[in-house]
Image (cartoon, rainbow, N blue to C red; front, side):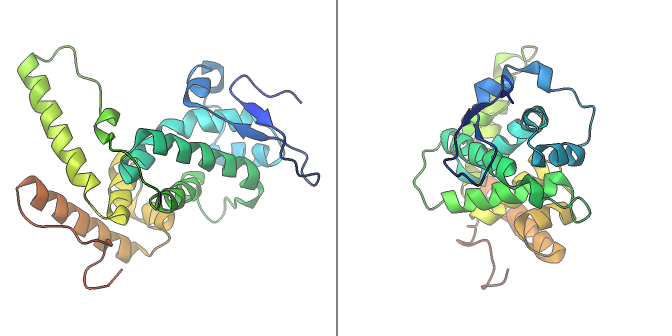
Length: 227
């Protein structure tokens, strides 16, 4: 079976596997609009991916790539590192699609847990700071002063989020960038709902304090050692 235009494949070198490993770039997926129709649920597509369907795989990438990179940028503070994480996350989707259980969780909850875990692992490596580069483009209808003020506000918020402990950054991104419910975000982080809500409260409090010139966030996303 030939790969779709959005996906390049490399041999795994594993004789026990019958599928290559798709290697993706942002440009490849972004330039293939034929894979952006939404005729099937994510969960149905994962079932097809588990059977080796590259078209279904490319569709899932097209649907979730931007949000995956957004979450990773929030946690890592680096666009380049975020794209590396996104590529690894989608590679794991291809390799592990048969492990997904739709009766246990939505696809987005399952997949973004993979993404967050990869981000937390990647934090062990040094990254450069370019979170501001992920901001929204300026509205051409706005005047110059308004655009400057909006950019300054966005940059201040980006710096404040970047200074949060990594799990708080992940909580903020899952809630506000992806719009996940508390239950879904908690599952993505591998914690209980109450623990997630407490984590998000601490993140919001820390952001308010930083944006108003006071307070410091904890170093591990906890208070007094509690999760």
